[in-house]
Image (cartoon, rainbow, N blue to C red; front, side, top):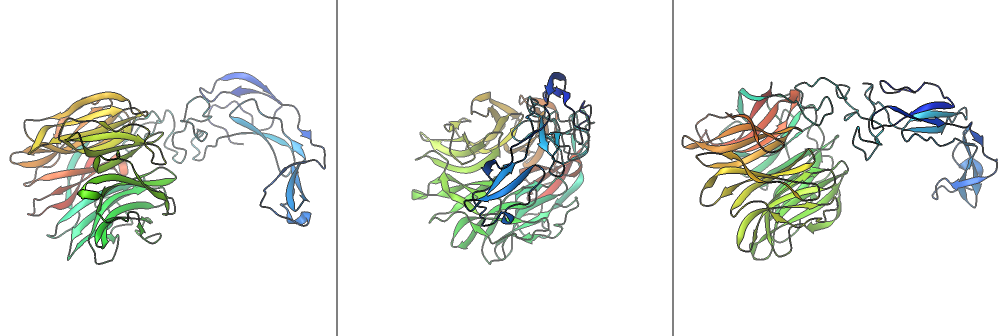
Length: 524
């Protein structure tokens, strides 16, 4: 058996050995095993599977030195031949070797990437008591406790921070995503760990939405792939990576009104099934937000109801791209809800949206469970006329940010923090303060800090600026301009990319029409 670095366990079975508690790896107790007992033959212990039917014993599974099988009452039953004593160490198990019938002691966790550190048991945080492993990414041999941190967009040393002590500096790369003079806009971005994919919309004879590998980085999606080839208006929405496929949701007018559609795509942009119609109502369905939980896609959007008043609905989609149940209303009954955004937390989802309560338009936050049931009330996070809300999850808390929009934008971007249970951790505070208009801020969590990018009026037009914030939402270092072209640069969308660099997709009208553009902030 293979053991993690520093483990005291021998490679052969012993009857007496020291137990290692997973919290710290120290030797703390003695675990004594008795020799394996031979179970009385002919004693049926349990049915293997109620669905395994038989007439004769040879229709049952093949016997081993540990178990055999018999056919009793048309069902295969397992007969235990060797019982191995239980281990007193929660990180080890004593198992019967099927060929020899010997009991062998094995760790419950494995070192899949060969870096000398094992993964945690399912349901545990790496390194915590009972986890039996402290490797925070057992698929990457460059990631383990104590590893040297480098600019690669990864938490190499498992301390919860990505590329700590790094700065993010713009270079000269700044291109239009769609060449030409037509209008275009950004939907979302997703990073596979190797390359980035972006969804965007462009105005042809109708509005069309596509997936594209980002310029300036290697990708099998070097050519744009249409989300749909139907001659109807489609507007790109979010895109996420599940580990083996991209999931994307978009607005689609193939049935007169705009509805929300979803599909999965492989790395080359090939659809993995038919388009899934998620919403199906008389009114418009707009502005989708999408997350991947590790098991399902969770999708929220703004649904137009009676009197043209929007509410926020949400649906579950399984890993094969099929709806799970019916859509659920996730904004409060009887209240307006629009512009939703989701963030995946440790035990649920953070939802922000824009709504009206008691005649006042504000941004609201609440927590949903993984079945899309609200677990907290919707609380106002900003003062009157707050809008442009977004949410991320980082270091055990949800961070909500927004700006103020009355007749004109205000001169401040705001943020607040909430716990997993919805309690306020950090009250609303200014994270950008300017003498001019501020709008469209976006946060990228980095473990021990955040990268904030926003649009600010400068010399008569909007430009993009960036700064780093601590987990307490206080500034770290100076404000940095990242666009300086003529025209307005707005609506930044952020994603980590190869080498720890940060991709910034945004809208800009330097050409006379608003177009989707891309620049890179290089990790130094």
